[in-house]
Length: 90
Image (cartoon, rainbow, N blue to C red; front, side, top):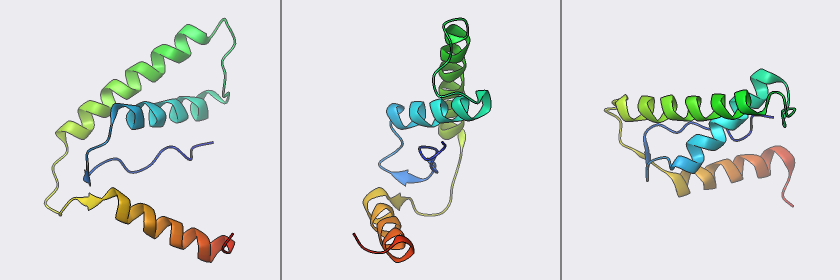
């Protein structure tokens, strides 16, 4: 359920608002225990996603790192190689 929650700090290019929103959505889904809220809970669910995305963006803006930024494409290639070893090449 939480596959979209990835490390978003210290990457070049920086995390997009879509990536931050996807992570917030997955977090709220995990905490609430549902992927789609009922009509009665929809407003609270959407507000939580918005608030968590907002504070996550502030957190990412505030964090400082002395390590060089990681390259997104390079990290994705490493993850794909690990998956191929773990699950076998398709």
